[in-house]
Length: 203
Image (cartoon, rainbow, N blue to C red; front, top):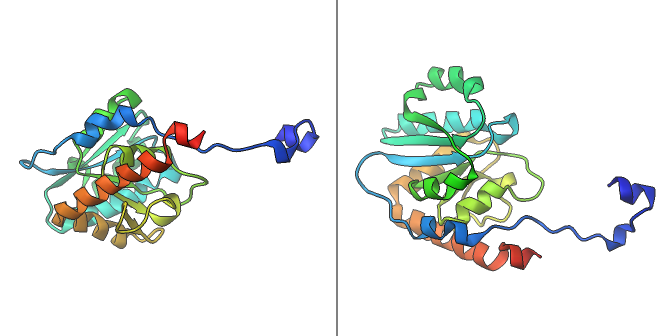
């Protein structure tokens, strides 16, 4: 940006290439079959900065648990969960949340173990890389609209209006209740990134 403003670089000569996804890293996750015994699992991966919408995720998860679902939330992060501990306990969901410290190298395998991937972020310029990773792993995604502009509701994922915690929770419940729909959304999501978001395609 500074180079453009200084005139060093001609703005018309700049092309911005959006992020891509390395599909082969997620091939195993894409082909994995989730076990049917035990609780179902939601997964969130990434840092826990305020913009990620973790507060909204916890509220939505509380509504999912209140609906009587045997479901757990796994948060894969290298950030501290401490800022959210009190809220999770107040909502009565802390005992059902697993916070796992892990780097990106473990993310594909952990995605393979999940039933639904969640993206509670509201505002985002561009495409969150975590969303591309979820889709590459054939995970059905529940997300707020503004951070998932590439997702087609009911086709490659499930979208809720920004900040509508009830709608977000209902999306999770719908996919838990209809595993066939969840599988279809995950497969369609994988197909979408195969066509549109590999690094080769983006370049």
